[in-house]
Image 1: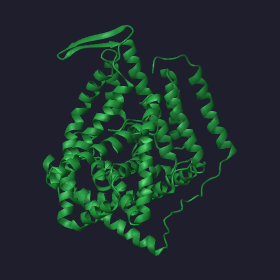
Image 2: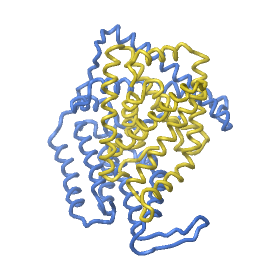
Image 3: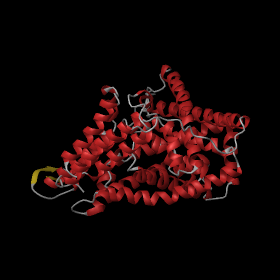
Image 4: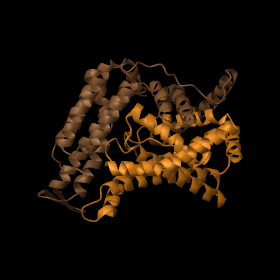
Length: 261
Length: 225
């Protein structure tokens, strides 16, 4: 099983000493720029900036990065292709007669498909920058400072903890099943997967019981305390982030509209 | 079905956030009250959230390709009610975006609405109907999971169609096209998830029936949503 969550990189990247809030602001800024940009070339700039920050500045291994960036490809290709077909306008580039009807590719449709595809990759690259450089643990304190209710932060922290407990459990059950050829046929697969899920659920239930006991034993009073220890905000990091966002913002604002929504 | 980061235009991204927010806020309010009454509930909600995440991160082998994974939110709605499930789904969706690169931040509102609100609400309704009609537990669980999945996929298709109406035929043509294409993977997936959830349910009843009794007790003590 692919046990490698993006979180693992976040603990080992070269931007570990940069304040997590700054990285969050930078990532969100890039996502908003990707939404605001309308020309393919400006979207490409946003994409390249996000990739540069993640692979260049944070030194995430390029092979791993490419594999992760390939995750949205299926969604992007299908959805953008549909947009190309659904949107009509401008010059007709090509037309095909298919058994279920006539397929016409127009300039506006191709443009919209291209812009949406690029925008999704730019947005995903910005998301990956946050995901691969910022450990979740450092975001809990940020969340509670941003006004997320304490009970939600507690719940999020507990879910985070249990994800690793259950993933370990699921992966050992999966290994045991696979070594007994459980996933050979579709029908057997469904049966085996259900047993896996059931076993993990029962294990999860027991973990919850044990956790209540452990929390009670440590005088839990209904409120967990997120760790607030994190690297301070440094001027050169802030200037670096501004140096990435400001020129991109200028380009996005000043570049002529490219035909996207 | 996650809408990936960046795919929704800003206006629609904001629209779905605005629609999802009140439900999630009500869910938070309810969780706060439930946890104040019974402290054991918080860890239980947490493992359920983690369970949903782990299920969604395990790909069903050899079924319909890489995008096939169960969501489990229909079952969540039956156990905890739709509004509490929406809070769990929101947290899980943030983790899916950050840990698995599924979904995104600006599309979070839309994804919460389809997977965390519409799916669970429909699933919950179907479950109540089935129980009201005296249908057995296993068929009811199956119907719940299938209905929740189908509702999620229909809402996602509608979200894409509203954001990108076709030049000829408008939103409706877009809806039919998006819905038709996604149906190829999503309908078999819904049936498979229904089977899986039903089998999981039977497995748990066989091994540890008391667990579900206790869950049922928790839900009954809680004020109905």
